[in-house]
Length: 283
Image (tube, rainbow, N blue to C red; front, side):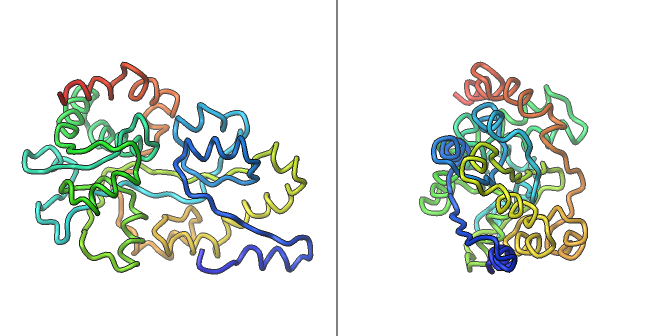
């Protein structure tokens, strides 16, 4: 956030001195960090890798504090004239995305591709063909989102990077002008949840401040700060205030609409499941 709203508000009560230390890492890595290092509050994307591992035991209840969608980031001016998901199967278009077997973010990318078919009147057979054809155009499949960004930005690989909306908005705010982006009208809602880690706040005796921080994230002040850096607020009033900043999504669905994380993992990302079949089809 651009201003330390929460510490100022909480300190006004005279209860505590607050230090908030951010951790930037992949979802699986943050799960391990939380389990081993005693973090009190966790803000992260929920992926199956997270819910299957420690989170289901140490953080039973998640609440979404913001949302975002998937974008198609292109070279400046969109030279390949990318307009929608269907353009990704063209023979002249090359893509970069991370491997959904190793990257939580790439799981969202994969589900967005699949949902672009099944949530737009298609069936699983059509989705399988489409996503298989898309991955035939993937020129590099790095292990995580950071490596896929480096491949696209620094190494110049690919015509399209499948990316998060907030990432491209923030990059534009920071002066990045060598890429453009498209937000497909059929898209998946990526929820960014927050939860207090019960065993850690009880151990450290700071449940009150931790729960206050979680509540603060849903205040209009905090929600406006999320919106400034490209996240779609969940507060209805703030959402209306910033409506013009975020393109309208004609068909927005969630991972629950695709079967929930346990179902999605089994169907798409388990060993021998659909993604492995798609990988074999690329060869």
